[in-house]
Length: 208
Image (cartoon, rainbow, N blue to C red):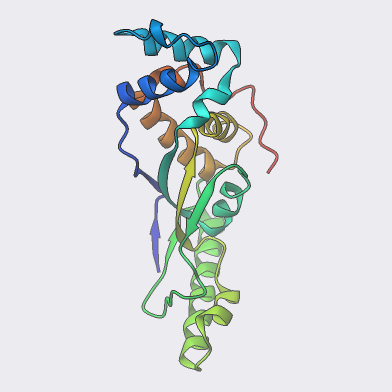
């Protein structure tokens, strides 16, 4: 058993300048103000859209991210309904040669030992079932919720804003918060105009 950290990888090339110009082109159709497109106008236009709450315009672009997390966290991720998801399948992938689990923050001492023991017992049971000829789609029933999984998620910027605001909340699951903070950091660096107003999520409430 190998314990690993969650991670994220932005799969969509993030050209902030292009994204803003693209969104400006889409948004100005609403006002028939295409003639006002000029050097530097996209940043001001998109920022004004977000400030006014006219966020439907920023749905015209999509960003894909690959996340490595626990199966438990992946179930929270797919609750974001306006998105597309492709996830590593425990039905078709066999883990007889080993499985990774995602570290659970905050566990120490006896609690950590108990947690690690439970993970190992789960994996041992899985391997035994595979050795007995049981298919992975059945043997997976005994796998731990901490088992690492890869999930590719595609959301538009409006939904990414919602995701980052909600999942960086102090009320969010600690592992989910780590993932959301990594994603938000990347977005703020690459497309700051769209994500600059999202802080640490103190006013958000995550009940999922």
